[in-house]
Amino acid sequence: MSSSAGDHHLDDIAIRDTRVSDAIDEPMRAMILDILADQARTAGEVHDRLTERGIERTENTVRHHINELRDSGLVDVVRFEEGRGGTTKYYHANTIVLSYSLPDTADAAVEEMTDAIQPEITEALNQLTGEYEESIEEIMREMQPCDHCRNQKYETYVLLTVLRRAFVRAQRES
Image (cartoon, rainbow, N blue to C red; front, side, top):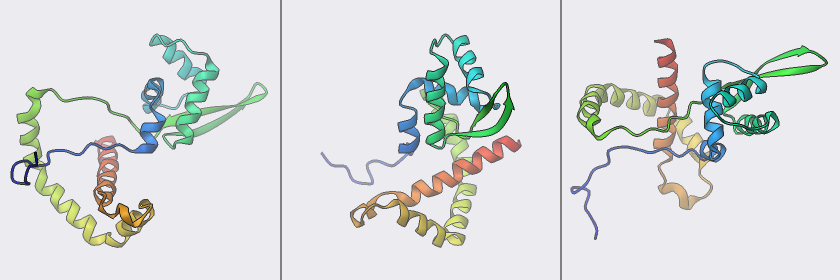
């Protein structure tokens, strides 16, 4: 059974960044990102926080997961401290993973807020696509592995990435 565009409309976009989703397929890694979101910590401190949450793993296992997150670009080494015959690394998350679902009762309030902000988002999108069209096109060319993939929503993904990052910066400033 097919449905025409008039029968149904797009309400939302779910984002699956393969770099992020592959890195956090292990549930403990999402917890590690949460632990590292607010302040820089050593692998030992992350291990202690996980233990407090009831997660019993060796410190080497925790270090392995932190390295996987670092290699995926989700965690940065932000400081080194020399001492006791070695170097201690401090890690900090640069990405927050939100894995929630809104309750059905939130639909009306979310729709009202969406209606309120949508004109400003339209203006921001017009500004981005107008002023940065060449940059967006260049990024999209690098994302597309072949000509067949041109029907993918690469521009939407690029614009959502920009908006998400701007949201994070704005939220930190408020």
